[in-house]
View 1 (cartoon, rainbow, N blue to C red):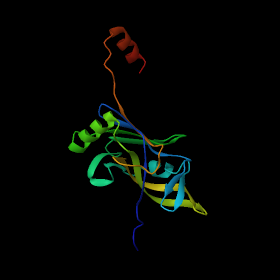
View 2: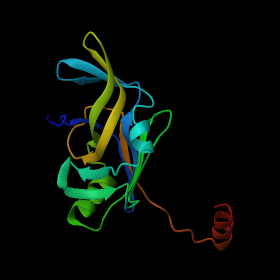
View 3: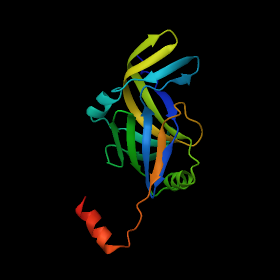
View 4: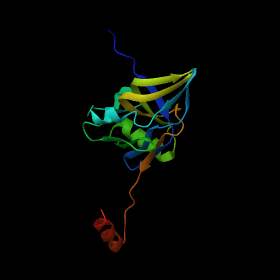
Length: 173
């Protein structure tokens, strides 16, 4: 018996701030052209993987030699909301981490991707709906993404020089 092949899908739009990338690794209800079919991710598709406590990796371009974080260590946080699979990734002080932070700050990253095995899917002609997947990894991709609406951004916390504003913000935590 052979293990199922892990499929990979990519999406665009990352945000970066300091050493933390945030955004969406997957977006629900958006069509993506994959080879000769269209694919859509249904809301809740990642729920079981997130609930079962599996250790999900964050990689650079799906390269297992370029680990950026993981859920087990708390450097990668994942959750589903109404939009999709949201993530927050604290980048390591490694060459890959520094390079990705620099590229994200410039807006040069291609987006996000994820590696999965489909465990519940529905086909309607050439349209595939992923209802449940076994999530293995999310990846920051430097080139193009299959799903255009994924996002990545670098979060940056501005230093507050006004002591009154700082005190007010700290009491609101």
